[in-house]
Image (tube, rainbow, N blue to C red; front, side):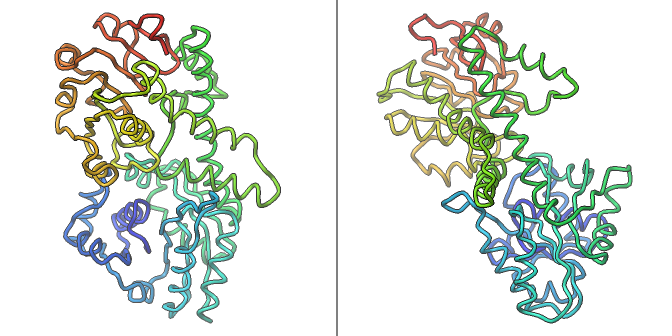
Length: 439
């Protein structure tokens, strides 16, 4: 498993759990040493225990020596990053560099699997890169991941489907054997051609992103008409053709997948002469949505926020992860700082990542209520469970003003009115504000 990032580490540990001998490779020596000591660089429920158990059992190991890992391997996974380039396309330099290294190291027939999220046509480029370095037979295939951060271990161990793109029986046989323990309950192994597998990953993420942006657009319409987006969501989600998943309005999507994959799919579509107005609109809606909470704060308090203090609950782009990549909280906090505000933030897991992003430009709180002391308003960005049923009396007693901007619609407006809060949510009526303050 080349790459010990989010995908590589989860996949490697889960494959080791079913009895395989897995060697995870990374060029970062400090990271490898930390993993050998059992120090996990990301927060993912269940992962630390899984890694520790399989390291102790001798099934999982970590190294910086790619050649030593590849030589005895039957299957070599490429799970390195594909960050967006300046034009939005996926940067494949790391994927292709690994492919060349695998080619130089191979000593026997090997199945090379692209696990990284890559544009259509990448497997062929990987094949060419490997074959340029070796005469040993290689079978390249695509095996996109569909892991949800915060539930990745369960997703891998109990997948709703496994997609593999192959063009040779040896590759199909190897992957069927590898994934058989995870599919005993009858969930599907979907075998298809390689380009279809590559597109499937991007299409799945783009569809989910589309649903989020669609609901955020509907939420804006609800606010302008006095409708309640929660009722609208329930009304359309009950349609079996639509379903209720990913219809929750909010402050925009973030993370390592949706923003990057939508951009990459837009870029690929343009390059192939099939531009997608739908995906471009999805991205535009999301970028605007990330500005929503900040714009509401500015409308409520004015453009100069000097002397104001804002508490922020939730920094990660979603709960059960410490990932702040493309997180809407970053947009809000940067905007508050630019306008002279003081920010005190809390997150159950992402504080260390926030320190890397913001340094000492903001203050950090170990306990969520402590962040509220003297705050002019609270802004909620992540729907962590501890935020769902807080002590509203303690919140009010600590805040300079009981004003709350809820980017995840955690609370019922009527309940917030009863607690005496001025409450702003997404796609629902404003509570407790004078007409001049409504946003």
